[in-house]
Structures are given as C-alpha cells and as structure tokens.
Image 1 (cartoon, rainbow, N blue to C red):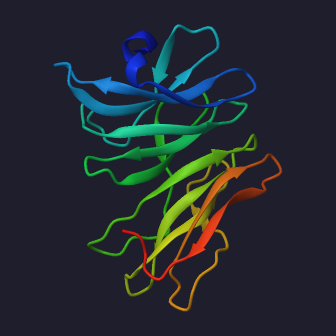
Image 2 (cartoon, rainbow, N blue to C red):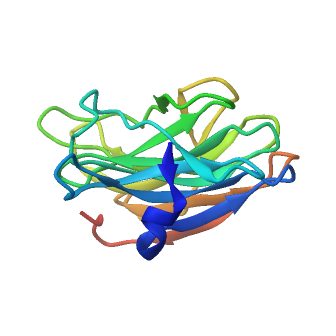
Length: 193
C-alpha cells in the first residue's frame, strides 16, 4: 500500500464511485528516494492508505506511470499507463484486483508506435476512450474514439469526422450506464504526433 500522507504534495484524485471508493494517482518512490513515476491508486472508504494499481512493465522499479481516470460501482477502474518514453497505453484494473489489463488499439504498423487511453467505464463494465489509427500504408491518421466491451480487450472504432485524407482527432471522454458516449471530433490537415 501507499501512504496518502507521504504523497500529499503531488497526489491527485480523479474519480469516486457511489460506494465512496476514490481513484487517483500517487508518486512511486524508488528505493533510494528518487521518483519512479506515478501510479494509479484506489482508496477504499475509511482506509488510511491507498492500494497501488499495477503498470504493464514487469519491473516494479521501472520508470513508468499510471493514471486512473474512471471507476464504476463495482470498483473496476480504467485509465492509462505510460512507458519510459511517455507513450500512453489504455488499461483496465478489474474490481478488487491490482493487475493492469492492456486494452487493444487500432493496429500498429512496423517501426511505429500506438497510444491511447481508457477514459470512462460504466456500471456494465463497458469502457470508452481513444486510440491512434493508421492507414493500411502505415500513415498516421490521428486519434479515434473507441469502445471496449465489458471484460474484453478488443477496440471498436466509433464514428468521427474526417477530411478527404481520413485524418482526424476524436476521443470518447465519458459514458453513461445506458452506453451513450460523449467526446469530441475534429477534422485535421495533419495528424498530431
């Protein structure tokens, strides 16, 4: 567990569910006192300490980060983890668990990267967020709003607005229990890096 007291200067909370469980972020100190990035954390009601949620790197001392952004009524949470070069990857932490489950993206061409984030999870466990999209030729087409079904990891692209080149930026930011998502879509001339 991580102590809330030790992290007060840079601790953040991002979501709370109806049961009072809080989801946020704490710094991860290294054994020599330096920072090893941030970690997503879950505070249960009445608990003095937070529970650290996992990252994707198997080395617990790796310089990486995790941000928890949304938590549902059962305690399942979503957000993103970062690696040493700060590439975002969408993840889910199942209720009562600390292991991060990587959620799929929309494909990655050889020699490139992909990124994304899970922004919201509803009480049914359906998640929305965004992921980078590439053309069949490997051209970066920008970010797309995506949906991940409950318990699954496959990304489904949601609709967007695009110009003739197919370049656009879109993300789903929030979703209700009926499964209706909101977010943004913007036509771009070039894809953001």
